[in-house]
Image 1 (tube, rainbow, N blue to C red):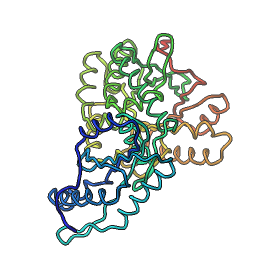
Image 2 (spheres, rainbow, N blue to C red):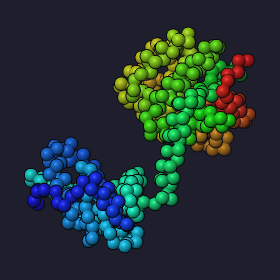
Image 3 (cartoon, rainbow, N blue to C red):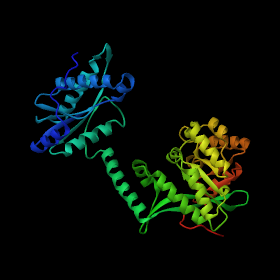
Image 4 (tube, helix red, strand yellow):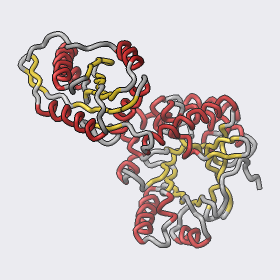
Length: 403
């Protein structure tokens, strides 16, 4: 194939101007799947030459009455002016995808294939470009090398709008200092007394208390998970500076990767005169993070200073016993779904019994979450689980019970 100049491609600014001028259009946004692989494997010069061929092939395969615009290094917009229904547009996109699947691109005696994804939108104005890009984002949650028509009523769009709402709500919470910890008691099953508390993040919106499952995804999207954790740490240390309870704070893999916890926690310990041995750091995600030498080193350093480590939600996802034994945390919190169903589901009981057996042999203290009734608590005590936490003993509250 001839590796020449990109064929009849205009820039993004030309596309915007063109969309403003025409009353109606179909827009097919063509995105090359994993184009960076070409650069990584063969170098940028090779990638540039592949891109020239891709541009030429797009121009060849574009529908009639269409104009092609290159709007990013591996992204092209095809504007079609025909009056077509959604089925015809889908067929048009699938035809282009099939064309690329069958074509070899030859550069410097190297033959490669390029897969494309196509987002489709219909309408007028610059919004159709954003809509087509949203369609690609949606399809790439499940696949590549396929096409998707923008649908304003799809669950993906609803989720996007919801995320925007909670991103704004979270921003307001930081500005208004309305992000605060609530505290749920943890009972020692031998003494029957409150021995520790878990600190759980909430947003106070006037008289409404907002749970984290509503806004933590927004925090991930905006990269503010560490700000949430820092806020929780400082406010929790302040609360527990007036008593002797042990307390636990949830941390995320994002906190560990940023590697700020040791200095920040020691600073708060000095500020509020709290011995690190009273502080438990709960790893929120599954324990895959324990495969990382850097994170293991960080956690062991925290334990050297006296901080304790708990593995949360054990038994869910890919948690496994081998990593648990290697790390040997101070506490293990059994995933609440097993505790919730322990009386009715034989498999849940077997899993809990196995975890208890392992922890007893390894000298790891066990906490059962989601204890919601006297009957469940009786079973927890029968299994000789060390601690219980759940609404049977108390829901999270803004204050700590000092009795």
